[in-house]
Amino acid sequence: NAVLTVLNDTNPPVLLKAASYDGNTILVTFDEIMDYATASDYQNYVITGSATAVSGAVLNPDNQTVTLYLSAPITGTFTLLVNNVQDFAGNAIAPNTTISGEAV
Image (tube, rainbow, N blue to C red; front, top):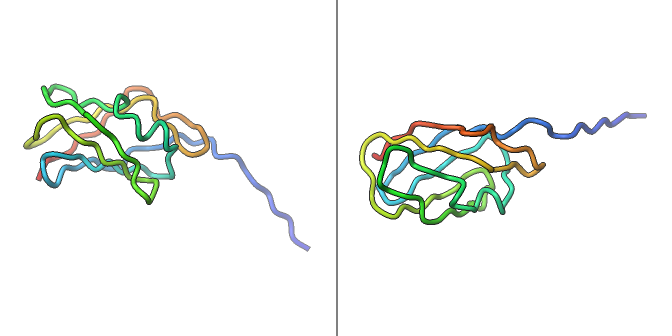
């Protein structure tokens, strides 16, 4: 005999990395599978201290990375602010989560 215990996911998602490999997009990596609707809403992402805005967001097929499309190219170091994004279980990322990244 075996006993299976299933626990609900109560941990909020965590930002692991943000990087731009072409200056026109930012690839954002989360630690778990994300909710399509909230992760794909470009209004949940802001590049702080920059005139460049996020103009689109797509949750990639791995469901853990999001490609952000930018209104203008970026260079150098940037800070990404993320709000209102949820994982697949409905847990919201911590309010005003930021991560630094670099356009290479």
